[in-house]
Length: 63
Image (cartoon, rainbow, N blue to C red):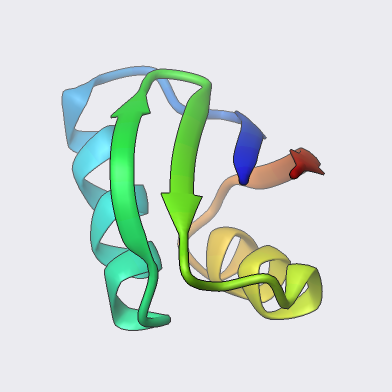
């Protein structure tokens, strides 16, 4: 699943998103400023809650 995320501006932000996705049980395939590609979690509401919980906004989640 490819996540488009608004508000990420540096590698610290990338690390926060990576950690949040791993805590959901996702396998992070790649994570860069503005995007994160994950496997293993398909509950978009849980993903959105995790992203917003660390101060970013989930723009889209595409399979």
